[in-house]
Length: 246
Image (cartoon, rainbow, N blue to C red; front, side, top):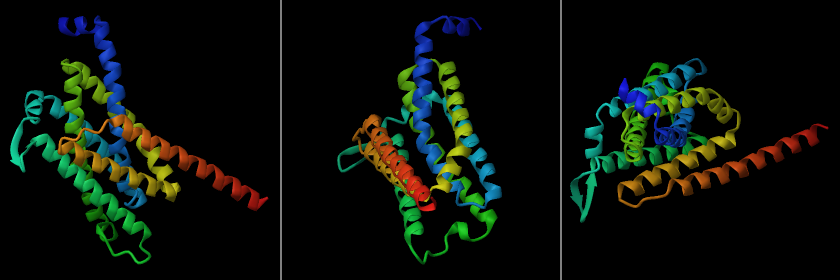
């Protein structure tokens, strides 16, 4: 209790908390886009449940990882060397996650533009589609959670601050998941834009795995610019539609 009181009285701790919450919220955008696109593939009655489970798993994973911070820190130590480059467990996790995102986004783009798409896992039984969706969300939750916690450890050494930041960020994800998924579903062009974001995020994870650091500001600036252009296109389409009706 004394430790918490001392922490609450420390202005530096409050600055670290606000900064960490902002960072966790921004990092959660990647995860949220993936969850929204994936759950929209399910029948309508299963989507909200899948989003809640997926985001709940993200919270559980991050809190569990915070309980093993000492182990998480060691994930940055190289364990294997390939062609002279050392790969840590974090690198391997990021590489697997990046490849999965690129594969999944490419597959979804093909599914959306192919005039004669083949059946996929979501065109079969509902139960199998639901389980497959949760499994894929869990995999990406693990990738983003490991990256998020390692970043948090680099910003502060206080576990309570990390826990509060994670809970606040995941709560924001939970509140935004429904509206974001509905917006994506109602705007087909946004789906393609979001899939392009996932490919970019996947390539960023792959680059990070090979030791090429890509500043997150560049990535999110590109995403923001693309989103602004799409917003202008949406306004133009609505204006044309009103003129045609009038």
